[in-house]
Image: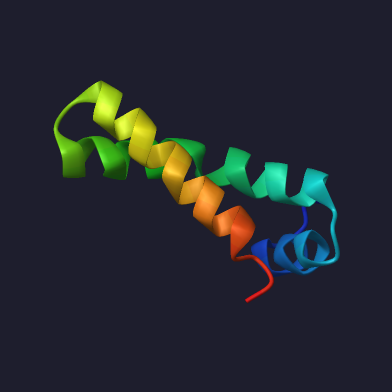
Length: 62
C-alpha cells in the first residue's frame, strides 16, 4: 500500500530522503508539464523544474 502525500511529507520532515524522492517521482511529470507551459521552452522548463524541487526540499521543514 502506497503512503499518502501527507505521510511522505512527515517522513521527509524527519530526514527520510527516500520519502522526498517518492514525492518528486509522484509529481515529476506534473511539475515538468506546468513549467513547460509557463516558460514555453524545454531548457528553461527543466531549469525551473529543478528550482521547484530544490525549494521544496529546502523548505520542507517550514
